[in-house]
Figure (spheres, rainbow, N blue to C red):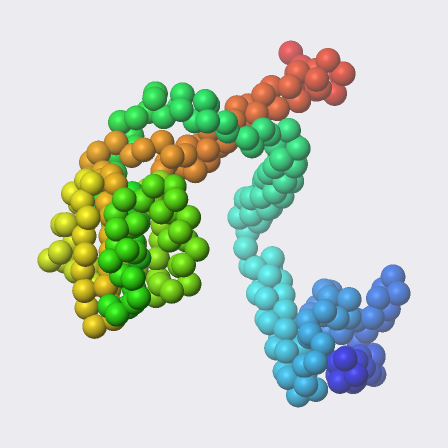
Length: 284
């Protein structure tokens, strides 16, 4: 912090020694281009705490040079561009300013009033009306797997529990999961086949078709150990995507539609209220 203050002090001292500058509204000028001034307030936050004196100087000088170059171009444009062109640019600037303020205000109103909860019935309704839109472009599976050492104690019993997988088996397997190299026992959610291929190195282009068979048990082995996999359900490319898989997408679509509807209502209401309160009139 000390170096930062020293750098700015040196810059300010140098600048104030020039007769070009004068204080305006108690601001300290740092640089001037024609009638435009750059003030200490404009650059005081450029350098973060802990920056060396040398780096601070470079940052500040670079900023001042860029500011001066831009200002010189602007002044040159004002001198050389005709009034018609300048008027067109001024209208664009005014329109951009209006757009920024309008967007910020609308976003604040929407954020305050929008309902961002999409319950399952609303999602189901949208899904039923647009089911053909939600086609899969990849295979999905519901499956579980465990990866164990080939010489793990009681492998036969573990395999039996894994295949049968009733409530008791699931709890027991979960309780000894620390013995597994890796595992996923949640077979109630849809996951992409590509995720499985990435996660389980023993799955290859040649054998991954075995994972696309419903209710299929697969046991594969490599130098890392034994993989036990149980496929509960499969959906293929171009099948309808299940609701639970696309619900996050549906939620976003429904919320965006609500936003658009709310904006339309806000636009109508603000004009209606302005007319009612004599803030907006159209003259014949």
